[in-house]
Amino acid sequence: MDEYLLFDFLIIGWLGLAIVSFIVLLVIPVPYGRYVRHGWGMTVKNQIGWFVMESSSPIIFFICFVVGQNSKTLTAIVFLVMWELHYLHRAFIYPFRLRGKDKRMPIIIMLSGFLFNMINSFFIGHFLFSISVAYLSRWLLDSRFIFGFVLFLTGFVINLQSDHILLNLRRFGESDYKIPFGGLFRWVSCPNYLGEILEWFGWGIATWSLPSLVFAVWTVANLVPRSRSHHLWYKQQFSTYPFERKALIPRLW
Image (cartoon, rainbow, N blue to C red; front, side):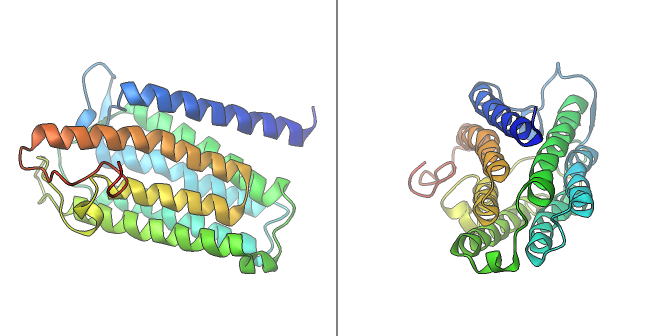
Protein backbone atom coordinates (compact mmCIF):
# COMPACT_ATOMS: atom_id res chain seq x y z
CA MET A 1 0.00 0.00 0.00
CA ASP A 2 1.19 3.51 -0.81
CA GLU A 3 2.75 5.22 2.23
CA TYR A 4 0.59 8.32 1.87
CA LEU A 5 -2.63 6.31 1.55
CA LEU A 6 -1.70 4.21 4.58
CA PHE A 7 -0.99 7.36 6.58
CA ASP A 8 -4.40 8.79 5.61
CA PHE A 9 -6.12 5.59 6.75
CA LEU A 10 -4.28 5.72 10.07
CA ILE A 11 -5.29 9.35 10.65
CA ILE A 12 -8.94 8.59 9.85
CA GLY A 13 -8.81 5.67 12.29
CA TRP A 14 -7.22 7.98 14.87
CA LEU A 15 -10.12 10.42 14.38
CA GLY A 16 -12.66 7.62 14.81
CA LEU A 17 -10.99 6.59 18.06
CA ALA A 18 -11.28 10.18 19.31
CA ILE A 19 -15.03 10.13 18.70
CA VAL A 20 -15.40 6.82 20.55
CA SER A 21 -13.32 8.17 23.44
CA PHE A 22 -15.53 11.25 23.67
CA ILE A 23 -18.63 9.08 24.11
CA VAL A 24 -16.94 6.86 26.71
CA LEU A 25 -15.55 9.79 28.70
CA LEU A 26 -18.99 11.37 28.97
CA VAL A 27 -19.91 8.34 31.10
CA ILE A 28 -16.62 7.33 32.77
CA PRO A 29 -14.23 10.08 33.95
CA VAL A 30 -10.54 9.23 33.56
CA PRO A 31 -9.39 8.16 37.06
CA TYR A 32 -6.73 10.73 37.92
CA GLY A 33 -6.88 13.85 40.06
CA ARG A 34 -10.14 14.11 41.99
CA TYR A 35 -11.52 11.05 40.19
CA VAL A 36 -8.92 8.52 41.36
CA ARG A 37 -10.68 5.40 42.62
CA HIS A 38 -9.91 1.82 43.55
CA GLY A 39 -9.80 -0.89 40.92
CA TRP A 40 -7.30 0.67 38.53
CA GLY A 41 -4.20 -1.11 39.82
CA MET A 42 -0.92 0.29 41.11
CA THR A 43 -0.41 4.04 41.33
CA VAL A 44 2.45 6.53 41.23
CA LYS A 45 2.81 10.06 42.53
CA ASN A 46 1.07 12.65 40.39
CA GLN A 47 4.38 14.39 39.68
CA ILE A 48 5.92 11.22 38.25
CA GLY A 49 2.77 10.36 36.32
CA TRP A 50 2.55 13.74 34.61
CA PHE A 51 6.27 13.78 33.82
CA VAL A 52 6.24 10.34 32.20
CA MET A 53 2.94 10.94 30.43
CA GLU A 54 3.96 14.20 28.77
CA SER A 55 7.67 13.61 28.17
CA SER A 56 7.21 11.56 25.01
CA SER A 57 5.68 14.50 23.11
CA PRO A 58 8.65 16.90 22.99
CA ILE A 59 11.09 14.04 22.39
CA ILE A 60 9.24 12.29 19.55
CA PHE A 61 8.38 15.56 17.82
CA PHE A 62 12.00 16.70 17.98
CA ILE A 63 13.18 13.38 16.52
CA CYS A 64 10.70 13.80 13.64
CA PHE A 65 12.13 17.27 13.07
CA VAL A 66 15.74 16.06 13.05
CA VAL A 67 15.18 13.15 10.64
CA GLY A 68 12.58 14.84 8.40
CA GLN A 69 13.61 16.00 4.96
CA ASN A 70 11.26 19.01 5.10
CA SER A 71 12.48 20.40 8.41
CA LYS A 72 15.18 22.74 7.11
CA THR A 73 12.91 25.76 6.64
CA LEU A 74 12.15 28.73 8.86
CA THR A 75 8.49 27.70 9.05
CA ALA A 76 9.41 24.21 10.23
CA ILE A 77 11.58 25.73 12.96
CA VAL A 78 8.68 27.95 14.05
CA PHE A 79 6.41 24.87 14.26
CA LEU A 80 9.05 23.13 16.37
CA VAL A 81 9.33 26.09 18.76
CA MET A 82 5.54 26.33 19.14
CA TRP A 83 5.21 22.62 19.96
CA GLU A 84 8.15 22.53 22.34
CA LEU A 85 6.95 25.71 24.07
CA HIS A 86 3.86 23.86 25.22
CA TYR A 87 5.30 20.43 25.91
CA LEU A 88 8.58 21.35 27.56
CA HIS A 89 6.51 23.29 30.07
CA ARG A 90 3.94 20.50 30.39
CA ALA A 91 6.55 17.76 30.87
CA PHE A 92 9.41 19.41 32.74
CA ILE A 93 7.92 22.35 34.66
CA TYR A 94 4.24 21.75 35.39
CA PRO A 95 4.62 18.33 37.11
CA PHE A 96 7.11 19.69 39.62
CA ARG A 97 4.85 22.59 40.59
CA LEU A 98 2.06 20.23 41.63
CA ARG A 99 1.15 20.30 45.29
CA GLY A 100 -0.72 17.74 47.35
CA LYS A 101 1.69 15.08 48.57
CA ASP A 102 -0.95 12.34 48.66
CA LYS A 103 -2.22 12.76 45.10
CA ARG A 104 -1.59 9.72 42.92
CA MET A 105 -2.26 8.43 39.41
CA PRO A 106 -2.87 4.84 38.24
CA ILE A 107 0.11 3.47 36.31
CA ILE A 108 -2.23 2.33 33.52
CA ILE A 109 -3.35 5.95 33.00
CA MET A 110 0.26 7.17 32.99
CA LEU A 111 1.26 4.58 30.38
CA SER A 112 -1.86 5.22 28.29
CA GLY A 113 -1.06 8.93 28.25
CA PHE A 114 2.55 8.22 27.35
CA LEU A 115 1.46 6.00 24.44
CA PHE A 116 -1.12 8.51 23.20
CA ASN A 117 1.39 11.36 23.22
CA MET A 118 3.99 9.23 21.47
CA ILE A 119 1.58 8.25 18.65
CA ASN A 120 0.09 11.72 18.34
CA SER A 121 3.49 13.44 18.22
CA PHE A 122 4.69 10.99 15.58
CA PHE A 123 1.62 11.50 13.38
CA ILE A 124 1.92 15.28 13.48
CA GLY A 125 5.72 15.49 13.33
CA HIS A 126 6.02 12.89 10.56
CA PHE A 127 3.42 14.69 8.48
CA LEU A 128 4.85 18.19 8.94
CA PHE A 129 8.50 17.29 8.46
CA SER A 130 8.44 14.26 6.12
CA ILE A 131 5.16 13.68 4.27
CA SER A 132 3.82 17.13 3.48
CA VAL A 133 5.21 19.50 0.90
CA ALA A 134 7.79 21.67 2.65
CA TYR A 135 6.32 24.79 4.26
CA LEU A 136 8.16 27.74 2.71
CA SER A 137 8.91 30.92 4.64
CA ARG A 138 6.03 32.77 2.98
CA TRP A 139 3.62 30.54 4.91
CA LEU A 140 4.44 32.67 7.97
CA LEU A 141 2.72 35.61 6.23
CA ASP A 142 -0.37 33.60 5.30
CA SER A 143 -3.56 34.69 7.08
CA ARG A 144 -4.20 31.10 8.22
CA PHE A 145 -0.85 30.91 9.98
CA ILE A 146 -1.19 34.37 11.52
CA PHE A 147 -4.70 33.69 12.86
CA GLY A 148 -3.74 30.23 14.10
CA PHE A 149 -0.55 31.48 15.72
CA VAL A 150 -2.41 34.24 17.61
CA LEU A 151 -5.07 31.74 18.71
CA PHE A 152 -2.35 29.30 19.82
CA LEU A 153 -0.56 31.93 21.91
CA THR A 154 -3.86 33.17 23.38
CA GLY A 155 -4.76 29.65 24.45
CA PHE A 156 -1.28 29.04 25.81
CA VAL A 157 -1.44 32.17 28.00
CA ILE A 158 -4.96 31.32 29.25
CA ASN A 159 -3.84 27.78 30.06
CA LEU A 160 -0.69 28.99 31.81
CA GLN A 161 -2.51 31.63 33.88
CA SER A 162 -5.30 29.25 34.88
CA ASP A 163 -2.86 26.51 35.89
CA HIS A 164 -0.95 29.07 37.95
CA ILE A 165 -4.13 29.98 39.84
CA LEU A 166 -4.98 26.32 40.46
CA LEU A 167 -1.46 25.41 41.56
CA ASN A 168 -1.41 28.24 44.09
CA LEU A 169 -4.71 27.29 45.72
CA ARG A 170 -2.87 24.87 47.98
CA ARG A 171 0.03 25.39 50.30
CA PHE A 172 2.74 22.75 50.28
CA GLY A 173 1.46 19.59 51.94
CA GLU A 174 -2.22 20.45 51.53
CA SER A 175 -4.44 18.12 49.51
CA ASP A 176 -7.95 19.57 49.87
CA TYR A 177 -9.79 21.25 46.99
CA LYS A 178 -10.82 24.90 47.01
CA ILE A 179 -12.85 27.20 44.78
CA PRO A 180 -10.53 28.98 42.31
CA PHE A 181 -10.96 32.71 41.63
CA GLY A 182 -9.27 35.11 39.24
CA GLY A 183 -8.66 35.21 35.51
CA LEU A 184 -11.27 33.41 33.45
CA PHE A 185 -12.41 31.49 36.54
CA ARG A 186 -14.75 34.45 36.90
CA TRP A 187 -16.83 33.00 34.07
CA VAL A 188 -16.02 29.28 33.75
CA SER A 189 -15.00 26.35 35.93
CA CYS A 190 -12.26 25.11 33.59
CA PRO A 191 -10.46 27.98 31.81
CA ASN A 192 -7.30 25.86 31.74
CA TYR A 193 -9.13 23.41 29.48
CA LEU A 194 -10.62 26.22 27.41
CA GLY A 195 -7.11 27.59 26.88
CA GLU A 196 -5.79 24.21 25.78
CA ILE A 197 -8.64 23.71 23.31
CA LEU A 198 -8.01 27.16 21.80
CA GLU A 199 -4.31 26.39 21.70
CA TRP A 200 -4.62 23.22 19.67
CA PHE A 201 -7.26 24.54 17.31
CA GLY A 202 -4.88 27.45 16.75
CA TRP A 203 -2.12 24.94 16.06
CA GLY A 204 -4.36 23.08 13.60
CA ILE A 205 -5.10 26.30 11.70
CA ALA A 206 -1.48 27.50 11.79
CA THR A 207 -0.18 24.22 10.36
CA TRP A 208 -3.27 23.66 8.16
CA SER A 209 -2.85 19.89 8.38
CA LEU A 210 -5.25 17.00 9.00
CA PRO A 211 -3.21 15.29 11.77
CA SER A 212 -3.09 18.58 13.71
CA LEU A 213 -6.83 19.11 13.28
CA VAL A 214 -7.48 15.56 14.49
CA PHE A 215 -5.40 16.35 17.58
CA ALA A 216 -7.65 19.35 18.22
CA VAL A 217 -10.63 16.98 18.02
CA TRP A 218 -8.88 14.67 20.49
CA THR A 219 -8.40 17.63 22.82
CA VAL A 220 -12.13 18.36 22.71
CA ALA A 221 -12.94 14.66 23.17
CA ASN A 222 -10.82 14.55 26.32
CA LEU A 223 -11.44 17.96 27.89
CA VAL A 224 -15.11 18.70 27.20
CA PRO A 225 -16.33 15.65 29.21
CA ARG A 226 -13.80 16.43 31.94
CA SER A 227 -14.96 20.07 32.08
CA ARG A 228 -18.53 18.86 32.50
CA SER A 229 -17.48 16.49 35.31
CA HIS A 230 -15.44 19.22 37.05
CA HIS A 231 -18.30 21.71 36.86
CA LEU A 232 -20.82 19.28 38.35
CA TRP A 233 -18.30 18.22 41.01
CA TYR A 234 -17.68 21.82 42.10
CA LYS A 235 -21.42 22.48 42.40
CA GLN A 236 -21.91 19.32 44.46
CA GLN A 237 -18.95 19.95 46.77
CA PHE A 238 -19.36 23.67 47.44
CA SER A 239 -22.72 25.19 48.37
CA THR A 240 -21.22 28.67 47.80
CA TYR A 241 -19.97 27.89 44.30
CA PRO A 242 -20.63 30.89 42.00
CA PHE A 243 -23.96 30.29 40.27
CA GLU A 244 -23.08 32.32 37.18
CA ARG A 245 -20.09 30.18 36.21
CA LYS A 246 -20.41 27.89 33.22
CA ALA A 247 -18.39 24.75 32.64
CA LEU A 248 -16.18 25.75 29.71
CA ILE A 249 -17.58 28.51 27.46
CA PRO A 250 -18.38 31.87 29.12
CA ARG A 251 -22.14 32.57 29.30
CA LEU A 252 -22.99 29.57 27.12
CA TRP A 253 -21.97 26.19 28.60
